[in-house]
Length: 135
Image (cartoon, rainbow, N blue to C red; front, side, top):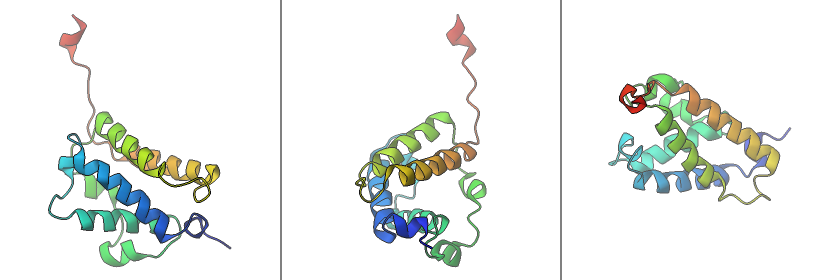
């Protein structure tokens, strides 16, 4: 049986998505500061390992980092709807760099659904409306 990981091109596909994503993050004023500027390569590795493992690839993330514990790992960062939306926008752009022959509509939709789900669970700040804006 072919895994999702294998069906979409394995390591090469995840490497491209993650690299394209981080190209955008490095330039982003909103979420860029949340990332380790002295370890961009390590950040790329960790996201690539995580995604590959989730989709049936090598268990490299667990071997190097243990259980993903996403909420715990992201807890130090203030993540609200704006940060989630920016992350998703950049991830969508990164996924769009993968040709349809490599990432067909069904696999793309499944991958995107996962990205949205993960981004939503990482929100740890509720942005309340500014009451002064209602005057």
